Amino acid sequence: MEQTLVIIKPDGVARSLVGEIISRFERKGFKIVKLKMLTLTRQVADEFYSPHRGKPFFEDLLSFIVSGPVVAAILEGSNAVDVVRRMIGVTRSFEAAAGTIRGDFGLGITDNVIHASDSRESFERESKIIFKD
Ligand code: CMP
Image 1 (cartoon, protein in one colour):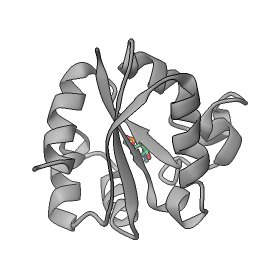
Image 2: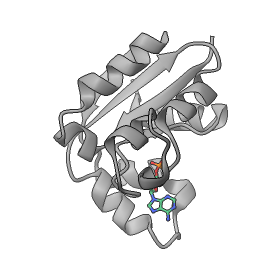
Image 3: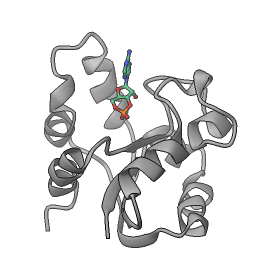
Image 4: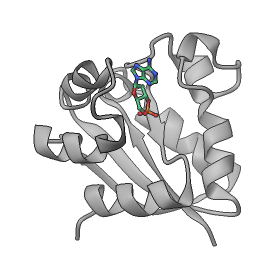
């Protein structure tokens, strides 16, 4: 069964959306395999977002992602990567379709409520960084 990683970002946690968001994944049929709250260090955030190093938004992204606690989960279910990407909606929350997590709860780009792995390879890399144990 396929797995994917989601991270409810500091805005989602601060706005008390954790229960609502996790509940959507549970109701959809995903199994929560791992779940934890943590605050990323700058070093871990830099490694996690390393594919975006050098992009104009990188510094803002790092500052934002370390600004408060996040909730990370590994979800398991059929076609987890693609299905979860569809459930969260496009990166620019103000363009995300109604019914998606970003479409229903966000307006921002950097502060876009949630991250999800965009491929199986990203999942392997990202989950090792976030769930080191
Ligand atoms: P995420 O799915 O976490 O992956 C990289 C993040 O960079 C993205 O969500 C956005 O929060 C953030 N970001 C900020 N500006 C941009 C941009 N112009 N294009 C893409 N991602 C951006």
